[in-house]
Length: 164
Image (spheres, one colour):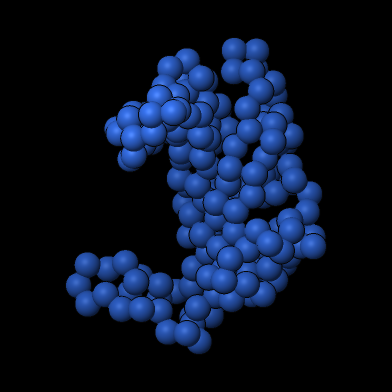
């Protein structure tokens, strides 16, 4: 029950406006993950940025299980080392990739141009379902939660990435 595993990997590209740039971002996510991306919409109105509610301004893809593990290994190779500030106290971590051509196996596409993306990784242990189930939801006990140090050790051991 103490074994840590990758629950999901979420890739996100925030554009800030609908249109051609958003379509390019969706093509990029599809190219990297071989999965269909989803457009995400704004929730607030920000007149200075011409944003209104329900306006598609970003896109994301969520991967789970083996696909997530394979993709995360490639993404971590793109950045080399991971600062310990990128880990939160619940064992999750996130990082950004400035240019998608840094990812091994992805080549530059003239129709997409240069874009960066954000990666968020959620770690879990067996038994974390009690937090999300419909009936009798419970909190994860303190001794069963994943600490920041445990998450850093998992990344070092599993992917061979240096955490500084």
